[in-house]
Amino acid sequence: MLADSAARWLLVLHAVLGAAAVGTATHVVLWLRKGRVSAKSAWLVVALLAAGMLVGLAMYPTYKVEVRAAYLENPSAVTVAAVAHDKALERVAAREHELPPEPPETMALVRGAAQAARWFDVKEAWALLGLVAALALAGILSLWTPSEGAAVRSVVLGLAGIVCATTWLAAIIGVVTSAWRAV
Image: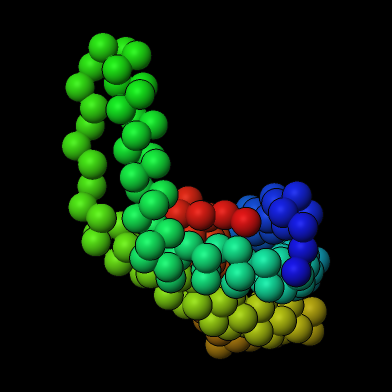
């Protein structure tokens, strides 16, 4: 397991790699739709996705213990955090001479935290699918030229769409999970 500071730096690196992968995968789809082929960009998507996965794997034990088990799947920890958050909001409201906001239902927070943990599992599976599709796309683009056949074009566009969609999905779920609790 990593130290908290090391895990946080890896999380930042993971987010940067994810953002770069989203941008590059989107770039590949847009250029392919215009009929331009870029095997280099596809291989860059593969490299970014693989690097992001490796960084994610490095911090996964820390996430599993410090975030998932200690918070997301621990109803008492979610409840304690919600109470502390509500008290902090009350202090701010009192300082600003405002009424504190109505606290959310605790069971809804507990269910939401557990759902975030399950969505993280979905993210892992889809990210792996995206990496496999990115490898296939990069391999095809390395060997195929658009003048060779229009039939392959739809497969290439489909693969690029899958890569782009899975990359976006993984990024969104990662951000939402981190919004609940980050390492």
